[in-house]
Length: 96
Image (cartoon, rainbow, N blue to C red; front, side, top):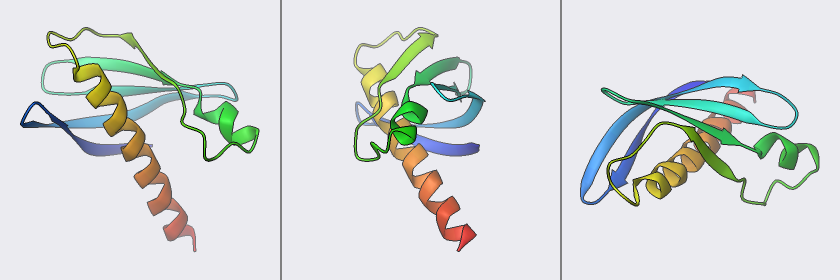
């Protein structure tokens, strides 16, 4: 899984590339790559999907990378969740 997304934060728009690095039954890891930084984010989304909890909000955790501005991490997590959901919806439509 690889896609581009925009992060709207503090009146600015950041374009980043997202790539799923690993995926197993309990978690999935994403690389979020900007111009000069790479941030790794971990999610428990596969566990929720296996248990049929599709409507639950997954937990995202940043485990590699630093931010200079407070609040950007929440904007990143929100944009990542929306981007992953959009990507999966487009893949479902392509399979039909």
